[in-house]
Length: 123
Image (cartoon, helix red, strand yellow):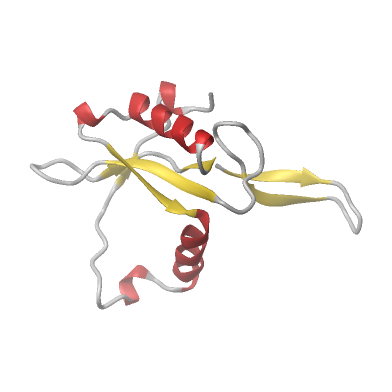
């Protein structure tokens, strides 16, 4: 997940945002993913999604994927998605300065954020 990590100076003490792997609890620098589980809105069902999780690519990514499958099972209509951290940051930067309502080319759908589930926390 994205967390603030305390850092002591110089030049001063501060909290620095960082991507922290939800599998190994180490900082993700370089190759990493942001991943989540989602449902598709159909047959009267609301579009839902899990919180976002972060992982190193490879073994950590597979561990977080297994955790998502356990907490948000396909049998309940969930599927997992992911983006490279670089792609995620580009989209986040764009959305921080561009309102959804100003996008004439797209339609943004309402969704419901599901809280982290018992098996959806750090392992």
